[in-house]
Length: 311
Image (tube, one colour):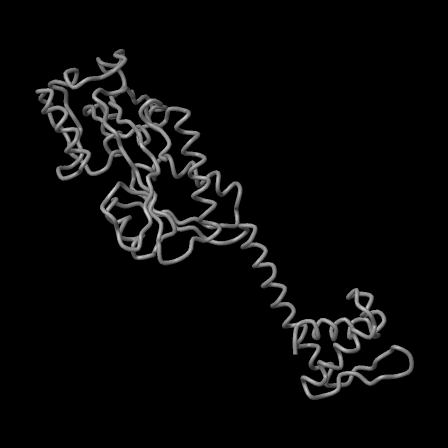
């Protein structure tokens, strides 16, 4: 018993004749007759009583069987619709894990555009530290992970996704607001909002000021760059952050200035190695790349000469 035989049976039941069923199926009458005969042989009972001409009278057993066949077709049609939706990204799910620096302004912009194009696909976005993001992806729990660079991780494919140039963030009305470029000496004695000890970025920033012989007043230490931006907005000090984190605060009055010497931030795209990427996730990565390039062109990730597409 196969689907084509069942389709022929359904067509004959609905039309009442081999002739009309053949027309509906774009087959010859002998082909439909053979499909019905093969089906009767497969199931072991007669479905129709032949009368003169092409008219067929269904047996009582055919009536019972037709009811179940139609129920099965409803399920098959539902599967066909689901397959079509999956193929056209009309349904599905993408699970993303990201460090806060890219989860605050960059990923919401990507998700907004993705949802506009594929409203049937649901998105789950989890935000955590880079170390946790990498662990989640290594455990094959997420489709996409954005985090800082690390040593090679088993079960994870990692490629450089974005490099951005650090910028100095100042509160509205700060005395350095008119300077084109901020240097370590400009921040001597300034209240400084810093990342926590142990953070690689914190170590690089501290080394720059140590090399310049400049002392800052470490007013506040915190875990995430977007918290730093909020504290700077409150006038509690200044800092150096990835501009991708600060871009949404600029509209609120935060001052963003180039900083010398340059500090580069690099973010990696991590994907699980032990399972294939879904079409929905592949399209998300493609859209992330497109919007990353747009934001680079807009200068959202720092100065164009230093921040650019990762090859």
